[in-house]
Image 1 (cartoon, helix red, strand yellow):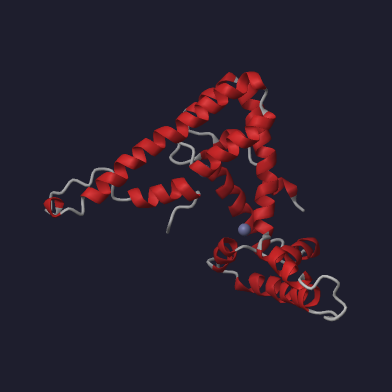
Image 2: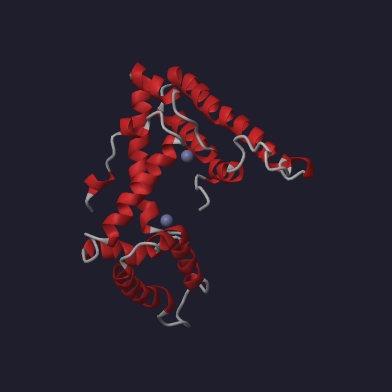
Length: 231
Ligand SMILES: [Zn+2]
Ligand SMILES: [Zn+2]
């Protein structure tokens, strides 16, 4: 595997831009992975062995279908489907010790994804760097606090992983900072979603109705809760 494509300097992610920095990290890794398997890696046997085995999740099948290169999906599917038949569905049915073996294999395949596995692998390393920088560098702690917000799933990820990796002395500050980033954003979202709902009242139906910051409040709330912005 070309590991270098999954290396992103953490300082490029923790910048004072809109959005959750960990979502940004995930999006960059995802983009690089999709670019790679749909292009340069299309004919690489080691990549194909992994995509045959793991397949893809719904999000990533759809993300690939949105791109132009349908031949690379076709080639990946051609050998993936062959492997599904050979490894999951074929074989002597009566000789199976475990009657549910096929169903279990099919379930495991449904839960695995080549792109997700690469993102998880790279994120794990990058998060360790985040924790190390937070513990040791004042400038990074400041950059962390300056982030726009943390979405709820990434607040959970940072705090649960950080609890094991950040020394006790620094962890309570880290948790306090992470909690503030996610709580402040939630308060803002709640205000915007309530404003959005009020705009459906007949008293607010005039042309000069003030939507304030609420027009995309529902999309932003979904993004906060799921890490994905509805398109
Ligand atoms: Zn996020
Ligand atoms: Zn996936």
